[in-house]
Image 1: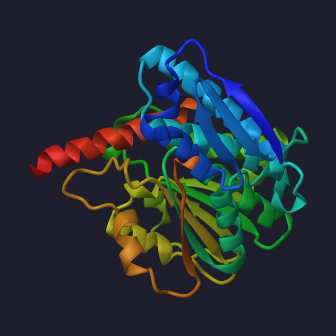
Image 2: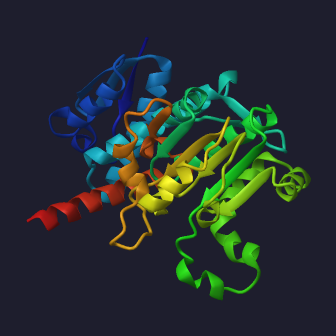
Length: 325
């Protein structure tokens, strides 16, 4: 343990400490091994060197927020704490060989970077059907595709089928220019993007040509039975109840599935319930099926994505309160 002090200047220390030191107490709760106290414009911290480094960075960011906004909210503190915790997880995972899923064609490692991404991996090892539910940027699709590519490379399955609803196209799909592939490619592009990172171009093209890897819209799954396959349904919040049932009943012998989606971003018409919402009640007690929930702490894109999600969550909660009055 080390003891170090941080001197607060340029802003009112009370903004950083919080009323009755509430902000410092919030930080201390996130770092239970640390002891944080304040006197005058000085913060004294007794902690491990690793914790002190993170606490110091959090306080530095709080000073920046105070200079910009003249106020600090509890959620600002929570966001900064979650960011630091996630960064530590990412750093630690770089030395853990068990988290390596596949190598990209450039040689980089694809890993589960957060605790909930690891839960997806672990759940897929123990269940045939896994639902990964969470907001944008949490790595649901990317992690799922990596798991499927690994299974294919290890010959645990003979093919990968990646599926997405093309909800945005609706009934206008037939009026779009080009053949079927050209019409649906824009809706399936995120799946291509993930695959292109994990497989070199020539190998991917060969696998696509031989139907070892298929990328298809959900509507084209009807009537099929998939044996020895790893199937991923992405953006599942845009599947209706009937479509969800249809998809899940396509699985054949030695097949596994991951269903990913964000229940807060459905594009379905208002009168249609998302199959991803109702399925959580329907299948919750079936062995071999698991649900993994991700949140803003799992966001692995730009650091502002966490704050954007938190801001929308707050806005939607306020709108809901207004609607109840």
